[in-house]
Picture 1 (cartoon, rainbow, N blue to C red):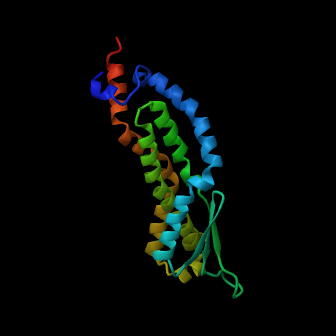
Picture 2: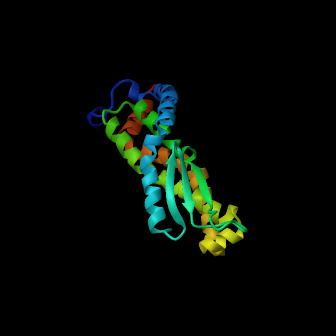
Picture 3: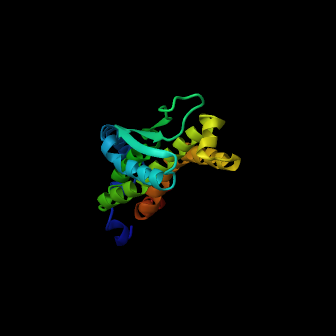
Amino acid sequence: MTSAVQADIEPPAAASVGGFVLRTLAWLPAAFVVWYFAAPLLLWPSVLVLRAIGHTAFADVVRAVEQAAATVTFVTSLRSAGAAQSGVITVDVNLLLYAFGMPLFAALTLAARERAWKRHLAVGYAVLVPLVAASAFADFLKNIAITAGPVVASQAGFVAWQREAIAFAYQFGTLILPAVAPAVLWVATHGRFLAALREGRARRPG
């Protein structure tokens, strides 16, 4: 193992794939518990991003974005068919559905035992915050452009191709981004650790 790799990794467990897997499994429950109970605070920056998007790009549709624990409520200017003059459509989105990559990334980072783990956690959190917001906003758009029906979609001004794009964004933001983004981010920030794992396996006899 080169000295450059050893500089940021605590030997010898860092070179063991089995040890890394066991440490990851040990960290996962604690990471998810902290994430679940600290969600209102951890997801508050994502709510700020959602408010910025709503008040700039969709100011004619989004009146307010409110947070209650891990749920964000979009208050719109849209009305359903036959609604009273004062009745407006609100959409609730559970941010936990799109933020589970945070504890996953944290568990993987802590299991790697790199000396720069604090920096990695900060970078991962900073990257995942806007991605959570993007997935949540795609969920909101899906609700007003597709789920709520053509009457509401027409009020929002969405045409057919825009509804198709929103449907794709929702599928991507729901099925792919929350699970893939933390894994890709972890690989990008732990190149030395992965090199140590490969070298450790290469030196094993047989």
